[in-house]
Length: 271
Image (cartoon, rainbow, N blue to C red; front, side):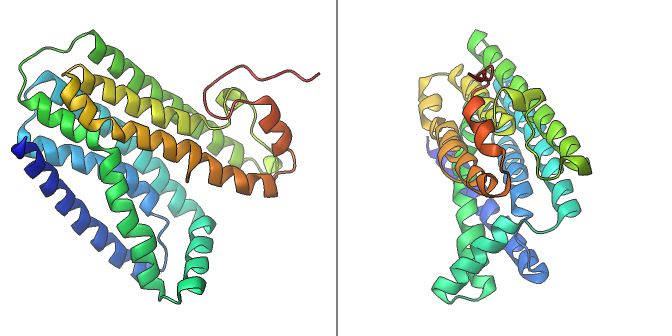
């Protein structure tokens, strides 16, 4: 257990150093929006940091590293392209402006305390299943069992679901005729947030791979998918996004009435 704590401490120190470096970049360009892309890529770094320390010869370690890398690189590249194309996220601009006005802090201090030093521990906690699982898997000679393969299947399904949802949303936004309209076709017909659902499904699948190693590593890492699901459904994901959509999309209220908020489900019929 002492080895695991040491590995996690080294990972967190490396993550914090990277976060501070990115904060310096944000101060230079006066934009923190790229932190969303680092959220996913940071978990890839943590997974590889664990593998570098513990080794990846064991089957579970290889599987976890592959799943996290596939998920993280896909999402990070998607979000980075969106940031380069669209520029600063107005949600971050508004959040920083409000905090500066209330606290009377400088822009740099506000960005550091509100965004970057907040993201580091949350990112670290979310990625705990992968870090603990790779460490535990590296010291185990067991082959991947049924639960592990079910977890891998769930994670891959989550990655596919999220990727398709993102692609459908991008295509919808690129059509000028859709300005002000609500996307309610494709996966968006069955859930208002296919990208968030896919994200959660991926990390619950990763947790199942860890569970295949035993209850101890699974219990140590379960806070990751629990926290992520809470964040996506109750905190900064779905709740915050929908608050803005209700104001900017007149048809969104009707979309909410007929479409599942998170889990994919056939839409309700009118009348």
